Image 1 (cartoon, rainbow, N blue to C red):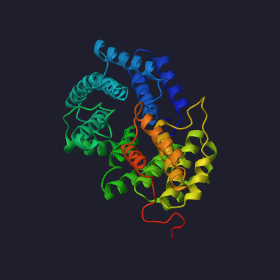
Image 2: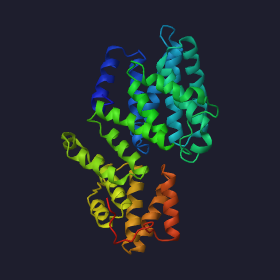
Image 3: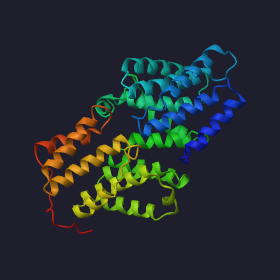
Image 4: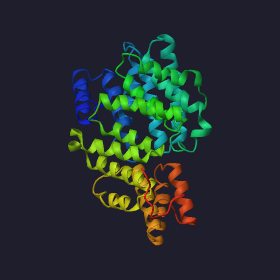
Length: 354
């Protein structure tokens, strides 16, 4: 249900398990994964905080106090791993580090007892990767320090690939994580990431998050024309009718970025105007809002409205104080405050030849 993007159905599964077996660890581990999936999309939302902490603490109690629970080390590792991530995004770095270290200890113990414990390998693969790539990721994940400062590159990605190739129900979860780790890599790694995300899109076509992730990677790779083709094809599909306001807004943001990348300013302005905000509801995640304001600022500069441009850049810097903002956006905003944004190597009136 999660992979299909149906979180209400996933909640029903959790409730059913808990009703049948209130002291079994499965429903708590299941729900923690659901809540982390929600938070990974929009970390600034706090409506899941109390539930996440309560379920993690309950899972730790179950795996430490009940001698009859199978895979107790795995469940304890899972709970501490979740608390490490949660404390990291909330800025509680000391607690995040302590939970992270404890999580690794438990997960390694689980793997030592059962070398085929595939889900332990998934979590260890993620932690090892970020730990070993700390220097290059420290800026990007400066607010998500939920990993420990000692990793194992020889095992990180191979662990994830092993989970991907297994018959475990977490195989496609590992696939998405694996792809996410590669999106800022070499051209070959980006190609590999897109290939893996495309597999997820074919398997779960109703999940807009996979489509949006694919589009965002293409934008980052400056494949602007392909981005527009992909968005238009998706909007023409049968799945477009079920898109949420968030999904539509994000697609318009990426389409505007693509048009801007192609130097088509008027089309980018038109798309920006289609993005609708509802002050009473979350209609764009905070990370998407930063891209929106950057596009607003750049378009304002290109159309001669310097005052509006600076206002948008300053909104980005203010947003960076309360939530994570992509370092690329911060760099571009700071540069554009000093000197107005211009399209590199292209006249504003010149349309590109496609």
